[in-house]
Length: 173
Image 1 (cartoon, rainbow, N blue to C red):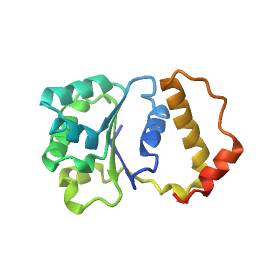
Image 2: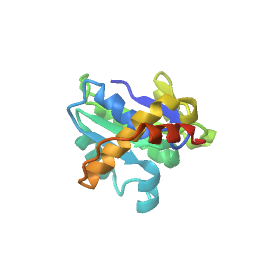
Image 3: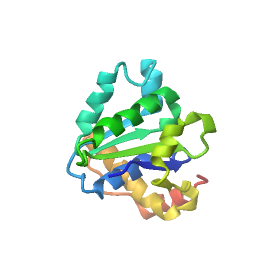
Image 4: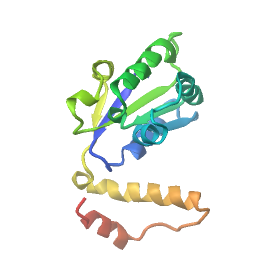
C-alpha cells in the first residue's frame, strides 16, 4: 500500500482514524505500531537512538501498519532517513510489506516537513476536519476511548449515556 498522510489540527482523533484505516485494510490482522514523534523525540533527545531502533520498529510492523504521529515535529534529516528506509526496504521486493501512515499538524510550518516527505506523500493525503465540524463522530470517538481505558484499567463499562454524548456534542471543541 502506498504511504498515507493524515493532516489535522491537534486533538482531531487522528490516532483513532489511523487505527480505523489499519482495521479496514488487508493488513488488519497484523501489528499496528504507533510512534508519537513528539514524545519520542523529546524523551530520547532524538527519535531513535540508532538506525537499528528504527529498523526494529519497521520489523515489528512488518505485514501490518506503522504510524508516525506528528512527523513534522521530527528534524527534517530524521524524516529523510525514514523515507529513505521505506523506499529502500519496505516494499523493495515488489511485495507489500505493510502500510505506512504519517500524520502532520494541518498548520505545520513549511520548513517542518522535508521536501522528500511531501513528494513521497503528495498522492495520498487525507485532511481531517476539526471535531466541531463533525459532531456525529463524537459518539464513536467517546466509545473508542471508553473501551481503550476500560481495557487498560480492567474495568467493565456498559456504555455512554445519550445525555453525556449530547454534552460532548455541545462542548466548544
